[in-house]
Image 1 (cartoon, rainbow, N blue to C red):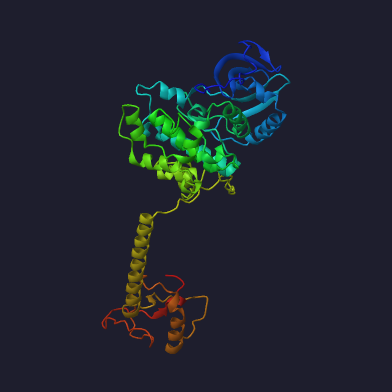
Image 2: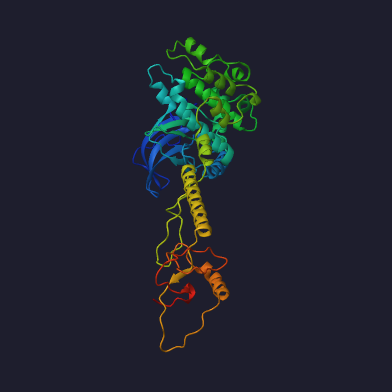
Length: 446
């Protein structure tokens, strides 16, 4: 974590080691990544897991503090639960009587502190920080609400950006004990170290709170936008407790920094984060993101979560039919197809209604005679029977009338005798060779 000033007596115990050397019978050192108030950071190869890692070696005074080592072990175990994509993973904590180090995820990139220093005017504009700030807010909210861990050493040197442009928060989960110990040592020697990013409550040794990280976030953004933290000279701890820092625009003007006009929204939110009273700060990083008008990834996830579920036709098993094939799922009908189906169904019902009405009308008023002209044949084998009476014949025809298709063509009878309940069919009075009438139900041939 370059950019920090190491206090006298806090040099790393591994300062004499070089590339290619193996430590703790597991890690092969490759190169130095940086040096800071908390020790030297090396890029190393984890021979057991066969991956590159970053090794942060503890300062010499810390290594011999049994209470700090005990806290470091506990915090390392807790930090294993931090699996957020914007938080540097902690893998292990190893130590011996002479040295100790923390194994963590290696980020191939650089810190925001160094990236700011490389810019032409040595500052970032708020719109350049918006995406990284959104990721930072999401990571801090995750740590506070899910893992219940406070960073307590948030600063530009602990914010890294990898080659893909993703922000990574480093030292999460180990700073609560380590930074407190280092800070106490640096303050006793009259040096600020990371003091300039601490909240008044943290300076006074109060119990840690997520609102300490909110203050440090404000101080971090203040430096990235103006090139200096809110208070960086003189009696810093008294200024942190008592003095209101100038606006970021005023600080830029004071430092003769060229750049765009600082957005008013950012001015107000950063000033709120730096409030002396924790109750006047944004109470969560979700609120910080909302007030900065940046889309927090958590907000995006929440919006996606309330979307109506879709039917996954490819993954839902469907029982096979008798033929061994699965029938396709019915496709839900949309509003337009439902209206079309309703119109078609209505038209079909109306058509059938009129068709039935026409048939009924025809059956009642134009019903054909249920007789058929046949030629009387004289049977030589059976005796001739007397014809049935008109009344009996009429009754038999009435019983069979409902079984006859009213639209079937039949030959009009030539007899003037008709059932009383059926319309009389007129006959030709002078028709020659008139034949006797036989009921249709008695028709057997001809």
